[in-house]
Image (cartoon, rainbow, N blue to C red; front, side, top):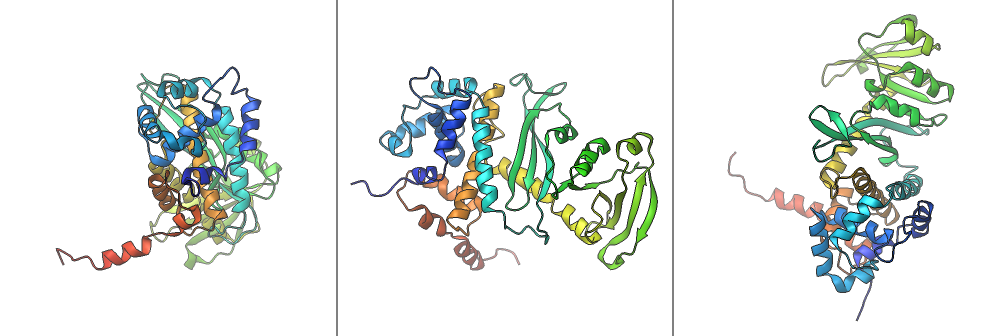
Length: 388
């Protein structure tokens, strides 16, 4: 007797499949295909992400071992590694990129009121880039250095919920500052960036759009002080100044005043200089905003550790981008499930549980609500010590 749905099928209930079909139709993904549709391809790759599969052969062996359950998981075709490899190579990666963006839109609405450490009503984004190293002889389409290949993941992270609102995948040679040309500034929003994105011509476009930026200044920055504002030095602040650029090119590219804040980190004792076009927030709040930028670094570290985006099932550009975008879709899907079902477990704990229970028939909310974090802590409290 069939009681309940498989855990994998319950996850699929949170996917907007109508939107997925529109994405497939937009790029004619199922054109001249008799079996193994784009949805079957997506399900195979999502299964690989959730269960940490190592290769196409690994995916095929695991799914064929559960052949009677595949129909109830959503599959409508037999899974073969050659068919999956061909689909990853041929079918347009933009199908899965557009679908991931639709999931991101759903997740951002769910996490719109999520706190992130600074009391602000406006949207706050952290922009950064991470590099995924590849072998040049295997991935010649992604040159990075003379003997090395790589792809870069340019990410604009919404700090409310750590949901990526914009992602661009490029080869290793693209400089991170060029990604600013592809962003559409949101009026009133804050963009927090490292000094690798310091380009005054591009930043002035953000200023004209009514957006605010917080960015670290470089050591050779040429400015002239106009005003100095009082600061509380006990907080680590050294100065809060209104300045204008005096460099030959920078003065032409950015003609408006800037705010320069010098801050000494009490932990590392490093002196940091921040530039911003916001003159209303307290200086200490600006430093706290930049500290929150570290969340995008943690996001990169998290997805590299817990998603399959460092080793790839295909070597073509289309296969690599397809795998990355489906991995992002899985990350956002788990975040959506966490919010909709009010799960207190972390995304890491949820992925670990889902990786072992994909073929089980347990209600998803009951499965994910049973976390063992407290029990593990209690076990370690009773652990004997070999050394004092």
